[in-house]
Image 1 (cartoon, rainbow, N blue to C red):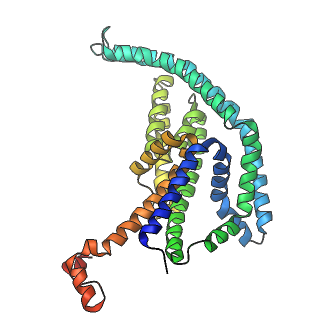
Image 2: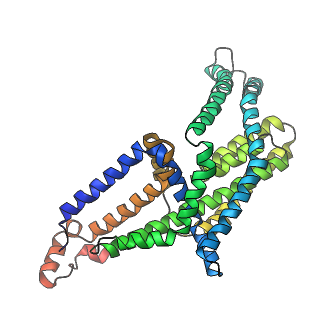
Length: 370
């Protein structure tokens, strides 16, 4: 006989509380394992595809690991130095950019930019603030990553965890399935499949879209000759994870810098704008339909709230688990709504009368509407 619903809710509630407590208390400790698990989840379809063409699981995992090492070395040698150099230069040149913006506004809108104008004072201080705080931010990020994501964690622990989790992924899933409570196993499997579909469609798909768009924006802006094109392209690609935000911020930054750098060469400014327009066309008509598909995604507002809340509560680990937890909560919320709409609390008197007469839901007006 199954446990009463009240007892089940108590046990599941305790389990959820313990999970969030451990996440809060052991954030830095479990960080490499969360990263490794996320990488393994992301790469599991690739390993499955390699298995289908004849490789064993160990061979498929080894091939993926070798390719990852090669890409990582190339990134360290080719991309990271340029990215660091452009980021530092952007912070240093920020005051000059705002001075030029101030001069432009003073020439075009003299009444708006008089000596006592709040806008003039704000523009004069923004550049200096970015220069000062930007250097502090970079230093803080470096210090944080030195203490949390140290060299051993980055180069050893995360890849090792990802390798072994990817190698044993199918066995781990099968073992978890055997541990499910028998009375609820079918429902849990159904919910798990829906959660996996949501994550596969959004995290894997949108992550791939971010990678492709970030590479496209960075390369295209650098070919046009835009200063800091690599930084802006990577930022725009990364923020594409939140729908519309990446294109908006990246487009505004790149067009604003193009106006200062290419003033008078209008075709170059148009080229920068066209790069983002083409990127949006490719994303909307090719990448998102093919990679994300029609799976149930996460609403942008819910995603932003989850990232903000979990980041504030659990730090960097919270940012990593925000999207999976948001997907789980979304699936559970939809399941609860379906249960509510099929129950007596929603259907009311007609449902109870039909249930008494023939053991089936009643045929009230609400049922006809559905």
